[in-house]
Image 1 (spheres, rainbow, N blue to C red):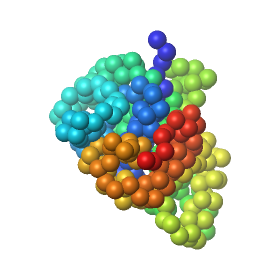
Image 2 (cartoon, helix red, strand yellow):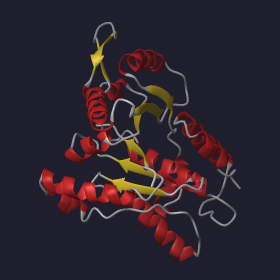
Image 3 (cartoon, helix red, strand yellow):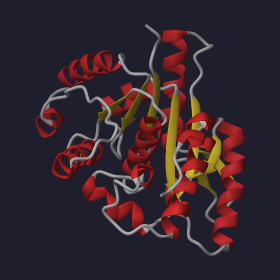
Image 4 (cartoon, rainbow, N blue to C red):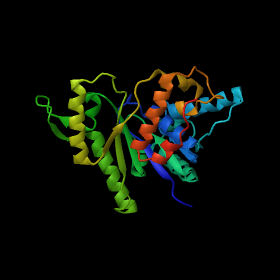
Length: 276
């Protein structure tokens, strides 16, 4: 059996949009015909797991049929969050092994440094890091001089990814490189001087620590209003339309295509249906 491709959505800062990205990546993969497994390691909040529970309930109530991922059982999230590291790792290893029946495993991680987050990063084929259009978010990737704004050094999350890459190289050999993509998420519509400064530092840090920079998802109402139904813009069709479809939804679908292209998943982008 071929090894599943592992995509880890990671950033040690909360509120960067990890779960929003995760649900859209999973949805796009599913609509492209991939077998997908999900692991939600944000044990207390469980936004990714709750999203697909909402999806199952909405489909049952509306007689709809949409693709679903598999979700290996991690048990009660709140109880597991209080367990010791050994028990958490045992649950994770069992769930990760079960997920290998899928073609792609998408792992959503919490906004903090945990034993499960480190384990997930070390098993990643691709790490996807969303960050808001702000030096507050950039601070977890790199430190800048407070006077000149010159890049000083990589910060804590960049160091975590570096450690994950070392672990991966030791366990699977140097050929097992981790592709790291940083996505600028929730961009403001208007161009701003702050964004130009931020983009300059991003490019410098990218060359220094080895990540690619791509577009994320804007802060659109459609992403929020579809969440309670467990739906994304990729799901909308003449038969699945819990909200009125507008030109904004068409733009959001194109945004999702651009995201998948940035992740190197062009074949997934091409197979996404047009908004109906």
